[in-house]
Image (cartoon, rainbow, N blue to C red; front, side):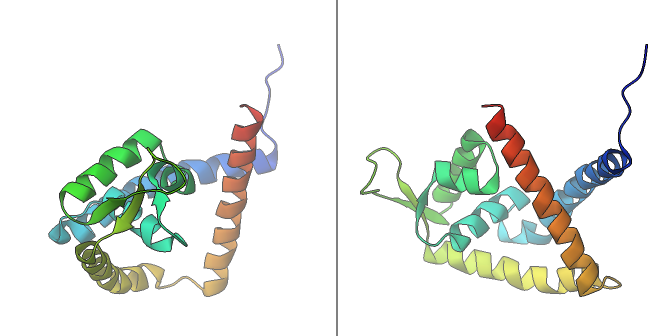
Length: 156
């Protein structure tokens, strides 16, 4: 019986994927520590960032899609953020039930404070890496995301 083998690039990508899993866990833990004093977690911070980055207010389903996250998980976190006064819901003129999520003034202040904490942290993390190396890694991760998205759509 012949064993199916990975191609050299498949083998290299497997190693990268395993390292990305490990890095993701470490990033979430570091992010949790970094913003804990603000009453945030990495997940809450990520969702606030998605709201800030959106061109216009979006419903939870769109935020989840943009993050590549589960809608129910995003809804739960958005509900927590709303309870804490960091986001609010607005009527969506295009869909009665899918309310729009907007940042409150308090949410903007907390998000900006998180950004101020992130700057020295990310600058230390980037020490020893060239901009070129970071840009190449970014292109690889972007291509990997696109391939995963295409594969997911092909399976639907």
